[in-house]
Image (cartoon, rainbow, N blue to C red; front, side, top):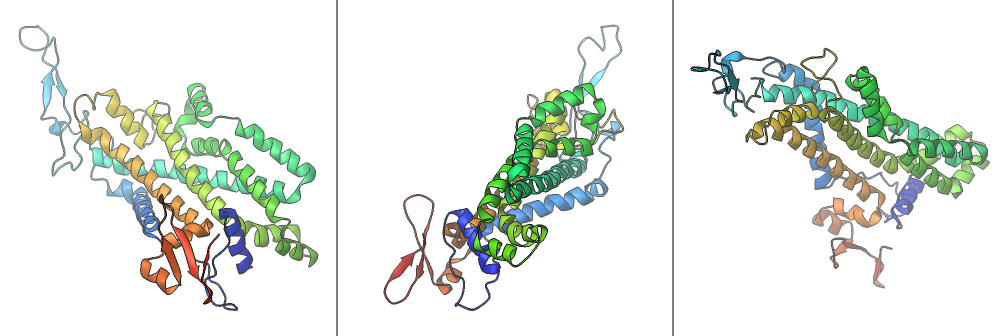
Length: 370
């Protein structure tokens, strides 16, 4: 089965597998371990740790307003001496300092505390929605592709229906008519998952249709193995790269939808609603609503925007690593020059950014990897 798994991964990537050792020796499953994958995992691990301990590590409460920090303020027009109206002052946010590492908002709230508290809800929605969407896509796509017939037609019709349902507009409508829809992160994650599983299900169905006619699946069927065991043991392991790539993409999509929903003010205000949670979209909304960009208060809106960019970068780097695992032509990118030389692989640069992988053959010459 190890050889079959390698073969299927190579076919999915569009090329033949490169042998990784002498004939007869068991071939170990080699996961991507290039610099891009390591950097992506490190960034993602940092966000996961912050999401777990962020609430306890925050130096202040995200909603706490410390009036003592309002040392910068401007006089509200129409008030003060000569107007007959008591003076009213509009506070200005404090820049980063030793007391507030990322400064404060215009409401004298600590930006770092809000950022730490926002990471948990934002990442939780993304991972939960991706997990539910992945389970749905695997159940529907693999089942439809392997069973065929009426089951395939019914499940394909179901996928086409959900493929036409837009996720973000549906969430906006629900949050407008049902206020609790935007404040419940579980409901938000569920709606995102229900509206984002169909595309991956169609891809998995197509791959399963190709795999079910392969020799090793036929051999398992002739030997008397049940359908469930064939799907779980023979078919599903060959779809792991596609499932993993779909999980990463859905995570990024869910985070983007949740941030957009909060930026539009439909996720519930953390300061006014007990059900509301801090998230990066809420931080951006408050910053833009209070002229943080025009006022030059970059410490208010830049940190959440940078966090969104970094998290998206980490997921993209991990996706590149999965591409290296699927495609044998890119698999050598995860090896150092010394390791590639020991393995007998020579990388010949060609026009563009894709390297041509060649393996030393018998004394007759070199054989290029297809």
